[in-house]
Structure formats: C-alpha cells, structure tokens
Length: 214
Image (cartoon, rainbow, N blue to C red; front, side, top):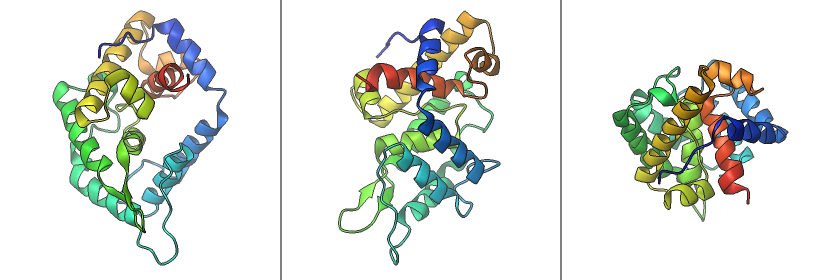
C-alpha cells in the first residue's frame, strides 16, 4: 500500500503528542542501560531485558516459572546465532537500506516471529508484533516496528512480505521528511524536540497515533 506519509508538520505533531506518554520512554531507557553498549542476544541477561521491554509494550510473553526452561531466552539466542550476521549494521539507517537488505529483514522477521517464546500448557511463539519490536530494539536506526493495527490498516497482513513492504514504506517516508526539512536525521530529531530519537521511532510514533489509536 502506498499510503501517504507524514509531512514535517504532521511528524512534529505526532512526536510531540507521543512524548506525553512517559512510560514507553522510561522502559526504552531502562533497556538501553541494561544492555549497554548494545543489545546482543548472545550476552547473558540481554534476552531477559528484552523480554521485560517487550512486555512493557503489551506483548504479554509469560516469564518462566521456577523450574521451567527459559524458552524465550534460549529461542532468541538461537535465532541470533542464525541471523545476526544478516542484520544491518548498528549505525545503518532506514534510508540506506537496499531492497535486498529489506528482503533479508523479512526473512529475519519470519524466523523470529515463529520462534518459541513460552512453555507450559499454552505455549506460544513470539508473533508478529513482538518480532518487529525486537528487531527495532536490535537495530533502532534501521528498523521500524509495527503492531497488529498498523500492519492490518497499512498492509492488510502481518506476513514477511507485508513487513518488508512496511520497511519500504518507512524508507520512502523517511526520505520525504528529510528532504522537506533539509536536515540529517540527528538534526531533525533535535529540531523536533526529541534529540537522539531514531527517525524510525518517530515515524512509528506517527503510525501509532494515526493507525492504532482511534
């Protein structure tokens, strides 16, 4: 879907409105502190920090009970061993992603969404929303997250192809607002009053307020 993206005024309005939600920012800063200098799912403690952050965003992935295996931690660590080399670099941005790179991210997303997340009587996989948010946490400058409402309203599905389409759409939007502003990403974030905030997340702020909050 070639949905019209935000112009600079609409993006400013969205990030200003989203800044009123203090909880998401606190949970993000806690994840950054607990996984400094970077989230790495092969490092002990990092999967647990990621799980706590995902649940703070409403993903509802049950923590293992005493005596249960750490299904989430083991699963995402195994995923990381398969896919880390295929992710964009930590400093890569959404605007620099190639179509081939986006297609690879679609494959990364598919495998992560299907990865086991919980055990017990009702086991479940990570699913589409948690997978997209985890990928954003791993590569915040390059990867936009989504939720079910954003995926369905913009793309009509939560498939790997739809996820890749979302990244292509975000890339188009990012290039548009950067061209309109005449600024780089860091300078744009500062000009919008959100210094240090990735453009991917500011575009997600817009998506959340436009397509999720009705």
